[in-house]
Length: 290
Image (cartoon, rainbow, N blue to C red; front, top):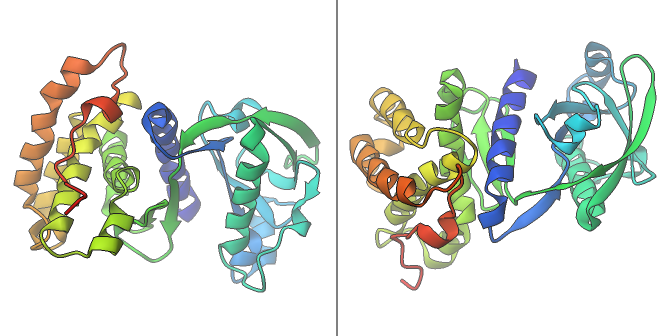
């Protein structure tokens, strides 16, 4: 179940990150795969056996249409090397949690900065494949699933979703809208701004408003109906009114729906061939000089 949810999160987030890359200030290269480390689990041997891995680093998910997918990399293949560097040589200290998997993701991005990265992997049937992959440019925001958690947040570089977050039962466009909201915090630089300026003076409320308003713009470029942003808010808000939607730092869910829907005519007016340049047409409410 965890692997399934992580796959949904990764593939949906990747779709948003690829589709909006042309308008993001911070971008990175990616081949569209997510890895996990058997050593991060209580019983690494059992994980390797369960998923049929020939080593510790397995492919957890592959984004549709990504370079990894086109190269034939599949879920539960075993990653062996990056640009000739044996996976076993990539370490991250003594910790056995997500750190090494993150270091491997960093190595793939670093190796792909020239546009290409050579990966070597083993299929479950024993075949070993070594191929160069042409990287895609994506918005610099990772998507990670947190074990045992049920919230959603952003930290400036990552979108963090708890495995028990109710949105996993929603439609894909509605779930994408939630990811777009958290991604918007990262794209708009809200986290470092709040760290520097503090949470007072209505700053959090303004960052939330802008994240809500940017949601439908991000959805359009990924091929989703922008109205799904309002649909998500209508579904989530009434059922979870005790969460951030009634917090002093956030507007009520119904007010947030109005803010989102107010963006839809502006989006329709500037959308061309299913694309919208939100960097030039979206107008944040937040004044970062304050």
